[in-house]
Length: 113
Image 1 (cartoon, helix red, strand yellow):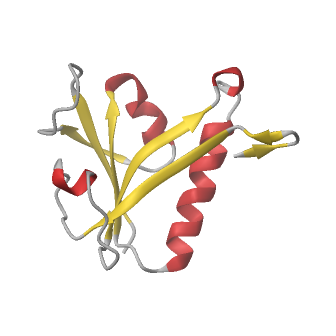
Image 2: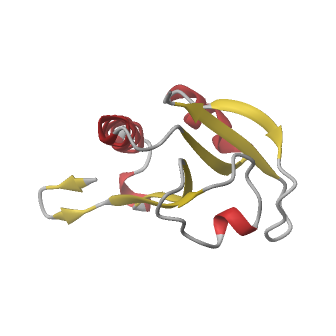
Image 3: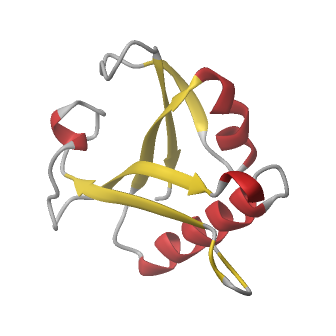
């Protein structure tokens, strides 16, 4: 996301050949993969709560769909952010088997095709 004056946010991810989100699918990039694993969605703290994240995610998803190369998008989120991702079209798939730190992670997905 860019506002006058600079970048205030970003989304990054990798492609995976796996349909199920696993630790391995989050650590490597498979250029021919049909599943997009989102690793980070970041908005600068001073710009949070103003709708920038929602606009950024909607635009990101629109661009991914337009490329017609990805069948689904998956991500891990902490419980408090699940409603945010639901608001931009992701389904809550349950708690993840992936362990990263001490928090429980939730899997969210969006089918594109």
